[in-house]
Image (tube, rainbow, N blue to C red; front, side, top):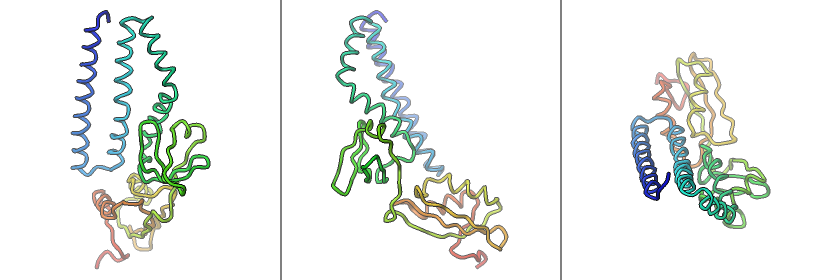
Length: 232
């Protein structure tokens, strides 16, 4: 890269690729929703979009440095030095936010801090604690570590009878493939005396719809009922 025009062309190419990928992900997300594919795949798609912008910026910065490695490299080093904390928080946040289990309203614990996630930002999160809202930098989580926890007041406990030709292990795999189950809560699937019939005890996350879980099981050829007698 020898001229500024080359850098401008690189920026346009990166922007075009970014726009194309955004359209592809938007179309894929709509397709999966229409096909009623497992919501976990939709969450993974959304999380993967986090890495668009940093990769694009790395490419553009690399092109900027290539114009004049000595001068432009020094400029980038100075900027990185002044913005070291913010860059560290941003990088830490990328990997933390990439977790498919991390979402608003989830309960987290980091060191002595415990609260509900009210907002997820690029450099940190706002937690609702007993003392009010609190801003927490992502690199604070790196130092203390953090854990996703559940709250007894935010869950819905249910029991459901299932009938399926699948084995108990296969039914359990289907259940755990759906992100409706609350974190930290044990789900119990018990085989009953009636052939191919099971009793499931499970806990829904806050805001989860019971009907979505029923429809998901039905799509995988698992019948559901409120009683053990499926013939009535």
